[in-house]
Image 1 (tube, rainbow, N blue to C red):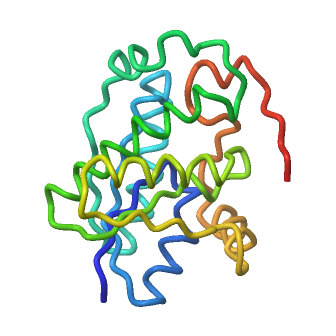
Image 2: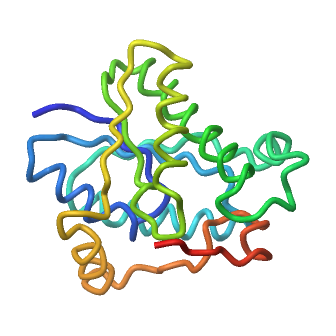
Length: 185
């Protein structure tokens, strides 16, 4: 079994990935680093849904510090950018750099993110941010797998229904609530 740090945005995006990892020789430690999520009640709701699933699977959960003020500072000047634009790139970098730093500090050689599983996100944008974060800390590999392929999207939807997860309709930040995404799939 190979250990991997899995940055997770929410339970619906994570379940099929976690299941796949466990069935394919990986032991994920799930890292919840999502200072972008607003309001705090939304953050707590997503966190609790993820923890509910992980407890059943017996997997470790690590919660990063929630610092929405720091995240807003990092997004300054990008508030009106469209979804899948420069604000999203910076947001992915913010969160994945925190994941990369945690992975490096705790002896992980590999990290991944569930962000690339969401149809609301540009997979190339997410993977570029993950590669960038790995380069910033050095001696760490970002796993840029397409988590939408190989039946994982269908399995995600099955698990969503099976566990009756809360399934949010926006990425989490207050800016994404205002600006409708343009899906290019």
